Length: 62
Image 1 (cartoon, rainbow, N blue to C red):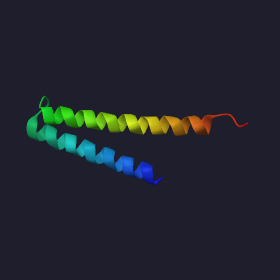
Image 2: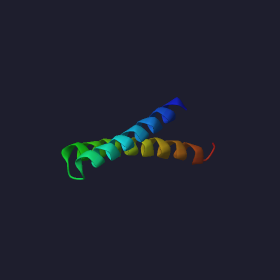
Image 3: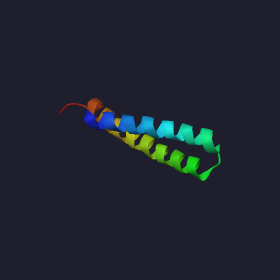
Image 4: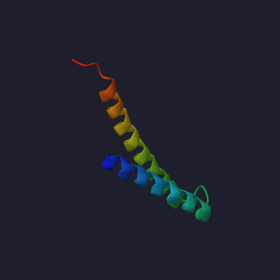
């Protein structure tokens, strides 16, 4: 699914950016914390999509 691929790429890009910011500024810098929160939101979005699709595939047939 194209949306999954896009979200997975966004997750990877955000994770890499967080790593780069951490290397540059350290743990407590506002840039690092902001990027961490952004990555958390992407992870939450991914989990919601995964949970929804999992529920659809495991629902009983009528």
